[in-house]
Length: 596
View 1 (cartoon, rainbow, N blue to C red):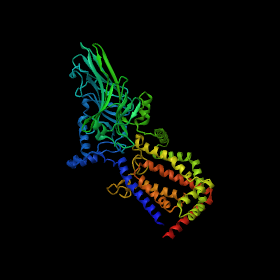
View 2: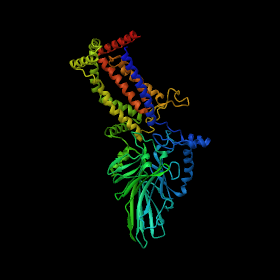
View 3: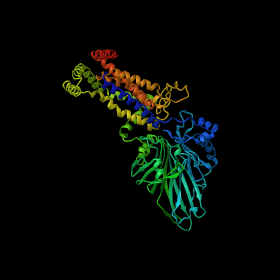
View 4: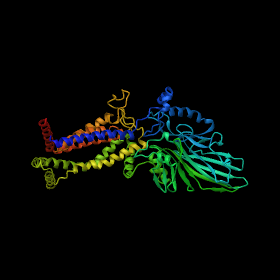
């Protein structure tokens, strides 16, 4: 090999190493290490409280408390805060929890259809926690004075509301809380809930006093950022909403901390906070007034809706209705709410710019899941459909490969003739392509056509809660997470986690092997450096793809296997090409032997 080729090969290897190490950092950002089970972390915190308390909170892709001391405190505080004697139980198909009679707050909600961990018997995923707990996240509905009404005559966060005896909030039984200020005004909070994740809260005031009362109804969601999922470049976590029927995935928590308060950019359709899989949003009635996001300090944030000022004359009453969504971002559920009149609610899932393609892939995948009963099998069926649609293109690719193989002796002759004149060599090769009617890029077309499908599946596996905790088979318990078994720690037998670029699991190895077999069936590159690059590419991709979601690797492996099968089938139809390919392999081996 001449000096130029040696330099090219060294550059290719160096760039490959840079990609591997850079990808490690990127993937640790996209797929941070999963938190340990809460019981295990709590035990560690109690064993060494000083060390646990000093740990800095971390964020994960899914969100949740990470500080061991916070996890232990949350479990302890919930036992005290969720005293059933001062609460109204919530019992609905989508949500379970309770309403706090102190302040009338909705501060205890869990999503029944989603478990907190991979264990199917674990408790439901908690969405809301009471104020003052480490994971505090809650909604409050109330009134503020217009300046003429004494603040003490209005209910506050400390007000204890009265509930009917035996009250229980279900889809069939709304609950009304009441409070009388002893000055002639009676306040009510009426809660209704549906079968999914929506509560409707009606704030009512009746004035039987001698003078008008001026008030502004409000609704607010408050939360801590300790439980926030990581805010990455392709999935937003933090404040968001729809304003003037356009969804805005901004600001983030750091922006809000810096500015203190950010008012809505237009008329609010809905606003709140989002994580990757969960969200809490306020959907005001058409009489909605101003709205804003606020930083309260100490990692606490608030989303507010304040309705226009109203004067309630003696003998009159006023009601304002606000809906509260608190739960999982299930696509079908959000779409149903949008069809029922909530603008752009289906876009609360951060599909990104390519939702026009991602959403159909998601819908097809979920339909296949309904038929197969397993999302891993559904991904394989999706791959079969994609490859089936692309089979005619694959045949054209094979025809191009056949034409390239046929002219390779002529290309080799041109390279030998003009080996000292690269420009002339390139000119003659292009002229050869033109004479023979060969398009050297035609073989790349199926790969380019698969890129949108690949990216769509990648995004679906990241943002769709329907993929969360979905098993495939054997050790693959969560298709949205990376392969958990790594060779370097003997598939989990050794107690350490390799860095991302060395976390090679079985799926990554299968990917590398199938890519290598696929490349072996392609026409050999004429340039020795290109041959070297193609030789290491399958193994480089094995390292790069290892930290990605297991479902994505299953798609790629299946696609590679189908491609190999297609090529074998088409070779059987053109045995002369198979012989030529075998000859090329022998020639390459002889060339390598001569170089040595």
